[in-house]
Image (cartoon, rainbow, N blue to C red; front, side, top):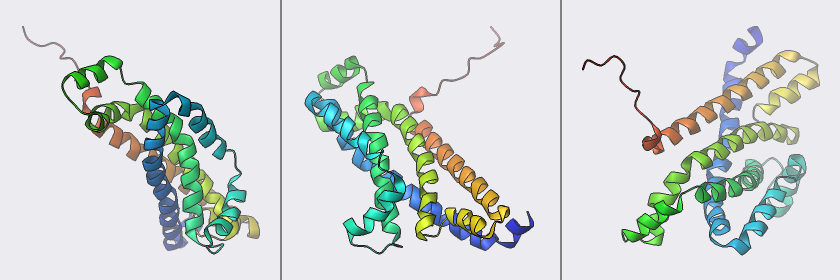
Length: 219
């Protein structure tokens, strides 16, 4: 606790860096996964190549991908963009199947009713299909968020400052305090992102909230 209180500004800065590096790929990855998931759902011939192809991306070791990014992007080894792009790839790998499954969970009768009402395909997708798929997509997004928080820590081995830096510092000095603080901070960040996604999902799906039945109401 003494070490934690004495290094609050440093921990706060590392926590902010960690959150940015985990959150940006989550948003960008979701925006990329939505059209890919729609294609996989819309065209049967594309389902297996897209799902299997994006799924294989997640098998690439994170450290190897972080090292390859500067060669591919032409950036410096310490450029945070390397982490953002690598984690975006992982996020897409996790979410394409989730988006396809979420869109597939929308009942056919709902789609037919929307079409019968004269709703066009684009409007139906954004106004009917995507909102009804939110619960499934949200579940996958929560997994991706926790995964990103964990993987970002690996970038500390390349010298990119974030909460993982507390791990490398603790191991280098054989000092357990920064390691423990780093672990707890990562858990807190992951929990905060998970709660935020859950809250956003509930806000976007008000029809899923059922009112509590009245008990003991007077006749």
